[in-house]
Image (cartoon, rainbow, N blue to C red; front, side):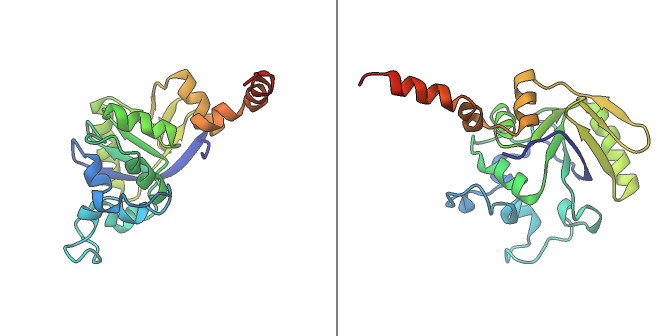
Length: 197
């Protein structure tokens, strides 16, 4: 898993509440067994017109100003719906390193940490400010600093955010559950060698 320490990136905004995992990655693309290759299908039903190939010019992520966006600002209850990790895999594969919203669905929130995407909860008023700034700028950048737990822009706007200490440490080190377990591989091996079967 890729570590997350400090990231500066272009912001994309999604002014919709209750964006569910079926919209993030539609079910017909869940046949893959790898964790990669899902980015091309991110928000597929919204990104493309009915032919499945022509970009929808009205969709947020298809705007030229957010072409290389890596930070997504969303509304409340982002990631609701099923428990599929594919939604986070699609966001990550597309290039998003962080999603900032007033609230997240619990399972999606947990899946983000397990897959190297940093979900940040900010107050609704802060999210409103970010939407206004992004709308006014066209191309707007934020810096997400996990070490200091702050989000900021180049104009002095800064907000702090909370992250569980153990999740923060795992993201800083780039450790998923398997990676964390492998840190004590020598102890596991010693235990297995000493155990009589």
